[in-house]
Length: 171
Image 1 (cartoon, one colour):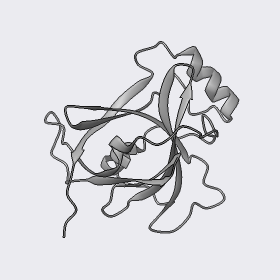
Image 2 (image 1 turned 90 degrees about the horizontal axis):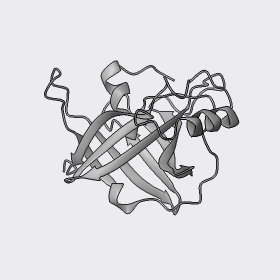
Image 3 (image 1 turned 180 degrees about the horizontal axis):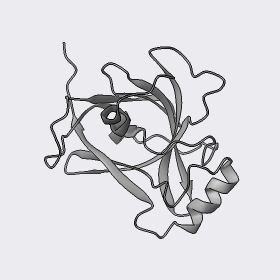
């Protein structure tokens, strides 16, 4: 898979962030949240240099899975996502399923991401799993789950990477 620029990687859905070789959970029986479906535009951080207007789209693939493309512009990555719950924490497991060059190659390993989100004041706030607490060197779901649950009360378990507002598609 092609490496994306740091700005795009920071945004990529809900996105990019912590990359793991295994999913935190493979079970996906929780229904998707219709509130996050649609086209979203990144809200630039006023403290940092302005970014390009980056967008992501979140679609319902099935009752329990999302199809996410982020950023919608050049170098976008496609993700399969599904809501999960470990302990008392709800989040979304993401798996890279492709980019403009096609599907991941067999030797691509860091294909899984874990994100959390909340919608407040019409904005979608996206956070990624903190690799300082749940190390990306952990290679299997059991180890990841154990580290996750050990830190479930830590307010730094997820780190905010971006905020989005609803966007309209160009016509």
